[in-house]
Amino acid sequence: MANPLPALSLLETRVLGTLVEKQHTVPDSYPLTLNALVSGCNQKTSRLPVMEATETEVQASIDGLKSRNLVIETSGGRVARYAHNLERVLQVPSQAAALLTSLMLRGPQTAGELRISCERLHSFSDISAVQGFLEELAARAAGALVVELPRLPGARENRWAHLLSGAPKQDAPVADKRADGGSGGDLSLGELAALKANVARLEAEVVALKALVARICAELGIEK
Image (cartoon, rainbow, N blue to C red):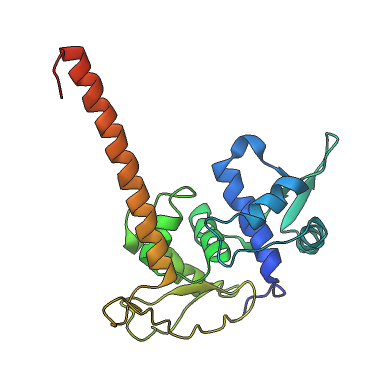
């Protein structure tokens, strides 16, 4: 069954996804001002594609989302602030909202990629938990909100995409040429982003451990 909501534009999904994301990552600044929302939509990390939306364009998207009750303008204060109403309007739990948010902000991803990219929004216990919520979203009686995409040649897992903007376009396979002339197209953009996130996390842990060892050595009077 098709999604009963009118199809959202790319910028509308970016605005909606940014509001959900920032509610979790910067709760002290939420609801967001127009300025903060423009910055969140245009940030260079955790976004695919990267955009350069103007205040006028973002305001128009806010107005469109308000007409569907997906965004609420909060009263009080000198500057207007905006909050999302995604879970209530779509009648989905917070776990499903986290998955939809990541798909809106980063594009199609596998269940494994989604588990990593959703970590700051909701911590899924394992990939099967992610898969379970995706399947529920795909089988909603009120209309599917996600779809499992056909597996790309060379890919190990199927990716999922949201349906808030209608049926997604299928990506053509990307064949990255390695220095040895072979094809490095086995990894999708999402998988590469997930690997980079893991490397960054491990590097931070190594730095923290080195600092801990140095402090212990100093306390014990041991030379490293």
